[in-house]
Length: 286
Image (cartoon, rainbow, N blue to C red):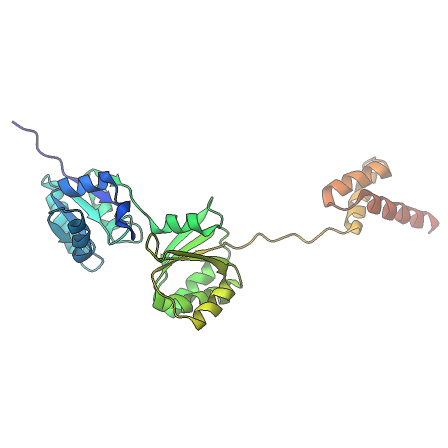
C-alpha cells in the first residue's frame, strides 16, 4: 500500500515588477503543485501565461480569507499541495496570507518557503538610510484620525521606519509625518524593478513641497529616518571645576583633578585648572 500523500503549503515570492526576478525554484513549484491560491487570479494568470504554465487557480484575498482559507485547508489535509502567491512580492507580509500560514501551522501541516522579491527589503537597501535596525509598518489606516494617532505613537521610534503608500494618499501622509515628527530624512522609492524605478533621497519638508506641485505616480515605499539621538548639552569648564573640586576632596592634586575632570567633560584641562586655582585662591582670600 502506498503511503498517503502529505499536503503542503508553499509560500512563493513573485516579481514586484520585472518578471525576470522569478526564481527557477519558484517556477518549478508553480508548475508542480496541485493548485495555486492567488490574491488576484487575473494578475497571477498573466504571470503564469508569460511562463507557459497551465495551473489551477483559486482565489484567496482579504475579503474571502475566512471561507477560502477553510476550503484550502481541507484540500491540504486531504493530501494536496498548494502554492500561495500575492500580486507582487512575498506572500504573508502585510497580506492576508499570514492567516493561511497560521491555519496550516495550527493543523500541523508543513509550510515551506520559496523566497522571492520583497518591496520593503529592496526599498530599504536602496534608501541609503540605516539598515541595521528597522520597523515595518505596512500601510497606514485610511482613517485620517487613525493615521495621525499612529504617527504620534511612532514619534520616539529610533529605528528606520518603512511604510507602503498609494499615490492618491501620499501627500496627506507626508504632511502628517512632517506635523508629527518635524523634518527628517526620507527616501521615496517607487516603481521598484520597473523601467521607471526611482529612489529619491530627500527630507519630509522637501517631499511635501515637491508633491504639492507634482502629483505622484506609482506605488511608493517610504523609508524614513528614525528619531535622531538627542545630543547632550556641551559641558562648560565650570562643570569641570565642580568635578575637580570633588576629586580634590578625595585626595587628588589640582593637576590630577583637572586632568580627570577634563576626561569626563571634554573640556580643556588648562581651563579647568585655571578656574580651579582661581576658586581656591578666592576661598583663601575670603
